[in-house]
Length: 114
Ligand code: DGP
Image 1 (cartoon, rainbow, N blue to C red):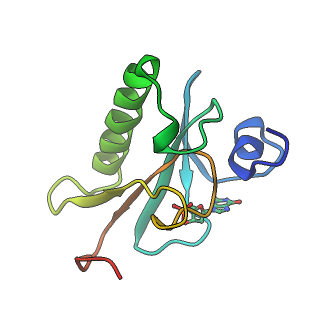
Image 2 (spheres, rainbow, N blue to C red):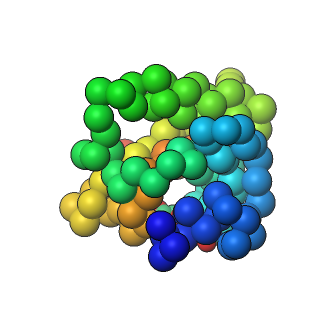
């Protein structure tokens, strides 16, 4: 999708501070970090949001979650933990319509969110 910010990050047309990349996934630091650790993991394929997942996407989503966990550990969140968030559509606060998981850590986070 030419107009999707995250598809443009996947292609390299928009620069990002990449943490990881393989044939299916990209992880990069959030441009507007809300915690000392704040990165996103996305599928390279354009999936609009979590509501659009199909049964055939189960393995991909498993890899996405596992990569989020591995990178959280690498960035020092193993001991104190982190928050793993997937926003969806307007009520969920999604602003970029390309499936992504946020990983936030490095400080205590309040709950519930506003
Ligand atoms: P969400 O509200 O869940 O859709 O979060 C989208 C996140 O994407 C938000 O925290 C800011 C981040 N973001 C938006 N545009 C860019 C960009 O061009 N580069 C990077 N690295 N992050 C971006």
